[in-house]
Image (cartoon, rainbow, N blue to C red; front, side, top):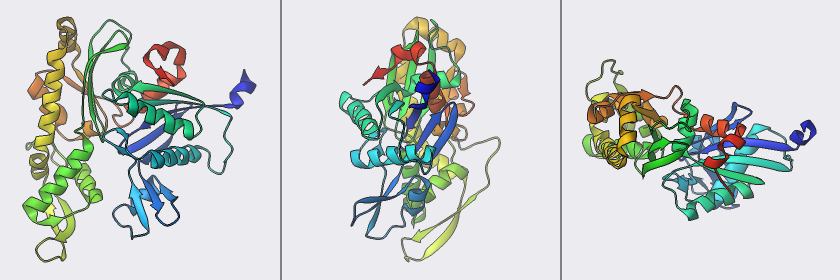
Length: 342
């Protein structure tokens, strides 16, 4: 068996719209932005992950940066394949010959179509996987948080990622009801760009908007521990000259209000669909938040005010999904029923 394991590579992948995380042997071996830089003339990939991210928004006409995933699903098949292949190479740099058998477990949004599922598995197979298993993100998040997904107890998981917000009620090892909406971290970033343009006449890029979201992003206009005002640099739309202004978390809370309201509506809709016995469980256990979006200041309090339920943020929200995916891979016999093999 030991000899066989030398020729077997097992990896769990959280193929996210914003970031891709790979776990091998319970260790996070790759955590990179989901972006690829391509030389237009030669069609060659010249940067993946952080290297490509540094080029994003700063390229000239012969280089383009591509985010292969949009709204949680593959939008550019070729770039996705190149990205997966490149990130697998990052696990063991300089080793170009992979073990002949590679098993991958990849998490996918619960609202994904059959065609989109096939695109994910095809990309993985083209990148060298012999066996591909798919697991739904809310289920992976629940396992990652440490919930016993097989017990007859209702648990509500909300995973706010980069492209999608996944809301699911889980019991007895299955998703009883779910709501997947394409409003998430990317929309928050776009809202901030739009707000700066409309309210301050200043043009900023996606990377700057992302930084604002991290530094002063908030879901409430009143916070107990408010962050300091953040200096934002961009191009003045009136004069065309670069300038700097200070932005407070209160302004960002206003900018994000509409998108957060859509997520709240989806949560209420999922609660309405929940069978009464499971609703009773959720009243007792509360709601679990995972994904990068759950790090938004005051979001847990805002959802709690709207639903009147206790909110628990996962210990490591950014990695809860991939840790659950890694756990499912390690105990593949136990969780086989949760996964779709291709």
